[in-house]
Image (cartoon, rainbow, N blue to C red; front, side):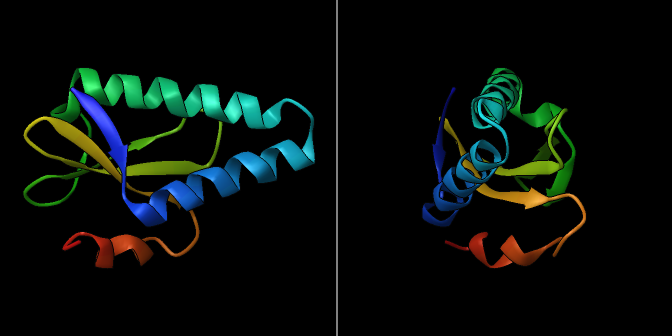
Amino acid sequence: MNSGFHRAAIAEHLDQVAFYESQVAGLGADYLLEFDAAIGRVCAAPERFPLVAPPNIHKIALRRFPFYVIYRVQATQVVVLALAHQRRRPVYWAGRIGE
């Protein structure tokens, strides 16, 4: 299974890379590695992770960074809907479900 991004989620993702890289050189790259590893686990078994909204919206927590990857499982693709901070605005992304 492959993956893609909701148009707003790609901006959030790139903002996080830039933010972490601005804090410490190389931390943005570490974030990218962690994100890629999480997406790899999701693509291998998309239904394995907690269901957030029926029937097909799930989340996976990044291990080192305080974010959930919120994603939709489609027939042939996993679509990242949001990179949601684990403690801020927990469901701000809910409006993206219908898009």
